[in-house]
Length: 149
Image (tube, rainbow, N blue to C red):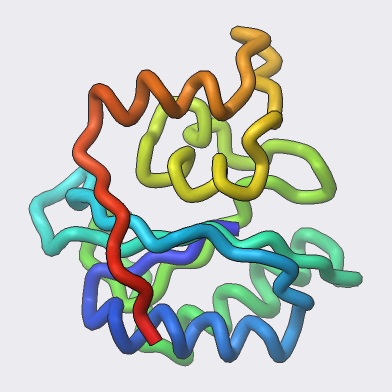
């Protein structure tokens, strides 16, 4: 799962994590990374990946839990899917299956996720996520951000 924010992220990310822990078991989390907004001009994003265990089905998790957490943190969904946001929670891998294929080509997703799943294999290139991240880091601006609390 990828958690991000570019509106008051220092406050929102810890609060999102705390709220998320009410619904799933958080088994690990990556460092926090700062990257430029993708798709539109806006403040830089802070993103981190979390490894969770849940008994919830995918649709319940995504639409019944994660969307409610985003809304509780002031997320407004509008026409512009790239608009700045207080909370963005995406399921990247679920039950061992890659759900978001942008994992393989967007550094802001891949860099945090690689800390948790370095040996995840891209079925097209047959390269591990760790191998792919080396190239993504060379072609993208992404920096580790001091932990927020």
